[in-house]
Structures are given as C-alpha cells and as structure tokens.
Amino acid sequence: VSTQSTGDYEDLVKGMELCARSRDLLLRNKLEEAKEVVSEIWKSDMYGAMAYCNIGFIQSIMTFDRKNINQTITDLDTSLQFIQGLRHKDGMISYLLSYVKNRDFSTFTEVEKHAELMYAELLLVRAVLTFAEDADNLVSFVKGALKIKTCHSLYKEMFSVLDLDETQRASDTVDRAGKDGIFDQELSGGIKMGWGAFSLGLSLLPPKILGLLEFVGLRGEKELGLRLIKEAEAMDVLRSFVCANGLLNYNTVLLQYTKSGSYDAELVDGLLTKWSTRYPDSMMFDFFSGRRAIISGEVEEALHMFDKCENSGIDWAQFYHLCYWEKMWCHAILLNWSEASSFAKRLYTESRWSRTLFSYLHLAFQYAADPQSEGLDKVAEDVPRHQLKIGGKHLHIEKFAIRRARSFLRNDKFLCLPAVELLYVWRFLPLMSRDALNSVVPLIEEALEECANVQPYHTDYPTDDWFLCHLLLAVISIELGDTTHALSLLRTALQSEDQIGLDHFYIPYAHYELGCLYTKLSDFSQARAHLNYARDFSNKVKSYSLENRLLFRIHSALSELPSREAQ
Image (cartoon, rainbow, N blue to C red):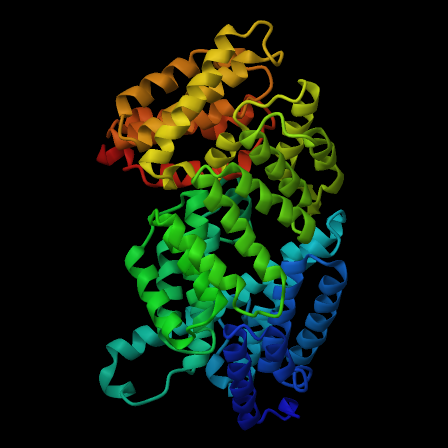
C-alpha cells in the first residue's frame, strides 16, 4: 500500500502506473476490474483516489441511485481529506499574499503540485454530486456552487503560472534550454484539461446565466478552452482519454442539442482512429463512432455500431441504456415509429434517468405509429408520476412531457404531431435524409388541413397547432433548400403570435429560426432583431417551455453574427 503522506515521489509514480492500468481496463469495458485495481490504495494514494472516485462518479450518474451517490460522496470526502494533507502549507505572509498574486509553485515539492491539481479535480466531481445529493435543499445548491468557485480559482492560478512558464521557456531558449518547467507533463496536461473545460463550459452558457457567474469572477472563452483540451489530449498523459471523450462528446452530442459551434469532422475522425486503434473493442469509442454516423446521415451504420456496443460485454447494464436512447432516435429518424416506441418503453422499464420523459417518448412514438393504440391513456396517466428534481429544480423537458401528456388526456386522446415535434425539439430534423423529410411533409400538411377544416377542433387552441405546423414545415423547407418558402411560412405564422393560447414557446422558437434564416441570407440586422426578440421573450412571457435549450442556441447564433461595426 502506498504511503504518499511521506511525500515520496516514487510512490506517486507507482500510483500513476496503477491508475493507467485502471484506465486501460475501463476502456476495455471492464469497469468493476478497473475499480478493483485501485481499491487497495485509493485511501492513501491520490491517483488511486482519482481513479476510484471517478469510476464511482460514473456509476452514480449512470444509475442515478441514491445509495451509489451517497457512497461516492463519502469516498470523495475521504479522498479530499487525505489530499488536503498533502497540499503545500503556506505561512501566514504567503497566505495573505496569495490574495494579490499567484503562489510560487517552484517552492512546492512534486507531490504538493500533484496534490493541488488532484484536489481541484476531485472537488469539482464532489461539487457536481452535491447538486444531486439533496436536490430539494438550497444549502446543497449553495455548497455545490462554492465548491465550483474554489475549483475555478485553483485552476485559474495554476494555469496562469503554467502559461507564463511556457511563454518564458519558448522565448528564453538560451537560459532555459534543457531545463524542466515548473510543472511536469502530467501536471501540465491536467491543468490544461481543467482550465480548458472551465473555459469551454462557461463560454457556452447564455448571457442570462453567465452574467451572474462573471460577477463572481467566472468567465469563459470557447476557443481557448478547445485549444487547451486538444493540447492536453495530444500530450498522451493519463488524462488524455478524458480529453478525447470530452472533445468527442462536444462535437458529436452537445453541438447537436445546443448548436453552439461547428462540427469538426477532421478532429472527430482523427480521435476515433487514434483511440479505436488503441482500444479496438472499447464501448466508449464505438458509441462515439455511432454518433458520428448519425451526424453523417449514415443511420444504418449508427445502428450497427450501437448493436456492437450492446455486445461489448461491459459489466454495467446502465451503459446499454445509452445505446437504447440512440437507437430510439435512429428509428425515429427513419420514421420507424413502432421501433422507436419500443426502445422508449425499454428505457422506461430499465433506466432510472427520467422515467417521466421515457414514458412520454413511448406515448408520442406509439401515437405516431397508431393513434388508436390501446393503453395510451394509461401511459399518459403515468407520465407525471416519476418527475425528478436536480439542483432543487424540475427538469424543463419533464415539465414539457407532463404538459403534453395532460393535454392528450384532456383533449380526448389527441396530440398534434408529437413525434415530429420531438424530432424538432431534439434537433434531429437536420440529420434526416431528404426522402425522410419529404415523407414527413404530407403528415404536417394533413394536420394543417385539420386545423382549418375540423369543426369543432380537437382542442380549444387550434391556432397553437396551426402555428406548430408552420414552424415544422419551415424548418424542413430550410433543410430541403427552399429558403423562400421557409421565410414565407415563418412570417405567416408570426402574424398570429398574439393568438397563441397555451404553447407560447413556439413564438421565440419561430423568431430564432427566422433569425438563423436571415443570417444564412446575410441580412444580419434582421437576424439580430429576431434573435434578440427570442432571447428577451421571457420578459413578455415569464416562463415558457424548453426555454433553457433555446437560450443556448440563441447565444450561439448571436455570437456568430458579425459585429455591428463590420456590417
């Protein structure tokens, strides 16, 4: 057992070696074995603690089981207490000076430097779990926020020192040639990963949230964040696979939902080639290969990759739920509504993530397959029974699902194009083939005709459904290249925005789509006007469905517009 409390650097290296073994097992789908490798040392070795607690964190997030969450929090507290004992002890003068300038890391031992980084990393993991520890408790939320602020300060200080050291070493080739930097390769990679993740993550937040964070000194910079994570990944250190995972997640998953940047196909292909060669049967990289296939329009290939993931032999069943989720959407993209409904039902039965959402997805896709299906009313009644809270807040998507389920029951088991609406909300329409999109158009046109001709209409708010049909047709027209028709549809819809009865969120979404369309047409003043209208819509309607995901997209769209001076 390592006795790192003695400050022995050799013990630190041994811990890194065991951590590398644990990583290799993790990427070969042997999660329990990966945890077992470091189970003997995690209480007395910081890198063992990192591996052990991160695997526990993955298990907690995947299962969302209260017992797992509480146990991982206990393990993190034990690890943080141990690592705190290894951190550099500042004297009173140094402590006071740290408020006005960075500490002198050249006076730290190697163990103390690693302890500083490890403390920041595990404190960040602890902060995330704090939000889930007691979701109804405001104290938990405040504690989590304070931990994140502490992590940010530690990473910021370490990166400032690293950046200055690298700059000086690059410019002072005579005096410093051949000399080691302040931080070794592992530390440099960890610092770049941490500060890069903070910079990227904060940059994606909409101004409404970011303004509050900037008030306490938290700022983001997307390009810096991406550059640092790429550099850390290329250094081939212990954390490189985490960086690869983050970059793949950002490009193949996050960008689709937030539209917060451009998909980097070259980077994704390079990372998958590199890491799939090293770990040819890794479910992690097979999963991202499936996501890449979806984005490339190769849906059948994506289904093949997710089937491969299911046959990987991984020893945590919860990872299969990720595959069910993706296969559900693959079948929805192909308009195989019954298959999509089947996977949604399977998720509802087996997963604890969001049974409210899964039950509504099952309802929506089965309704699309056959509106007269037996038992849909029972499914709708079940939707509100499993609502979650995270950070003291109900999930927006779950509130949306509950409203739709109640509407279904209230309006004699009727919904207007629920499956197509979900494809729009989750931004899968742009990933569909032209044939599939052309097959959807008649469905929308039929619903639009019902809005005009069915008397009495199915609901008390026919204008809401009429507006939705115009919005969906406009988005599909954009994807099919008919921008003129899309422009006409959105303008027509927005002429009736004051007549919307319940689904007010259609209005800012339509203004957002119109703003993006004007951007594509290089009419930047109109684009800015509509995007700003969508952004500020909450001033008109205090709270509307799916607001947060739209604010992310608006933030990205506005950031891509040229400055007023350049127009």
